[in-house]
Length: 225
Image (cartoon, rainbow, N blue to C red; front, side, top):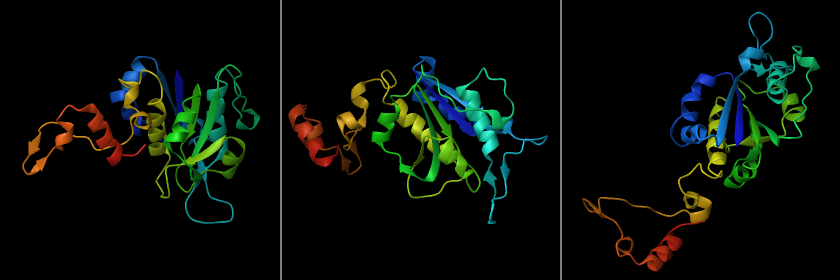
């Protein structure tokens, strides 16, 4: 089982997706588990402040290090009673294989290869940034690595967290109906279903003939792996 710990200011924005369809079934079958951690819970002061102005000036607000390290600490050391973020030590359990990931535009691009690699962990901690970014000390001293979906900018890390969760989960036995459903096993190729004819658009004859050797050859020529 993999537990996906997602640290976010907006857990309600992603909760429904995690409990639906393939991910929802895998959760019920105890193949995966979700732990949505509301960053606001670890905010500072009466108003639970989680962000502040950037040193050196500039637009926007930056997520503070204290709430993030407290949130990560609550995941890695759930029995700890320490409330002061400065006293929290990020110590991983020797019994569980954990990876802490910060989603960032500067991170390494997330690919199918990365998804397969991450599927070998028992706990994945996803830190979802917001606003103008996250205090750089989170990237340097708390996260194990930074990942990005690509060369574009999003409002926060929630969508990357959902993408990574689904992509990683698909590599776990039992999540998909058939292991052969993995694209890196069967390859990528055009697919068709009924009706055979839709106006002028027809299904290629080779797919209707039942010759599996010719079908495999057709798919290999038009797809990629």
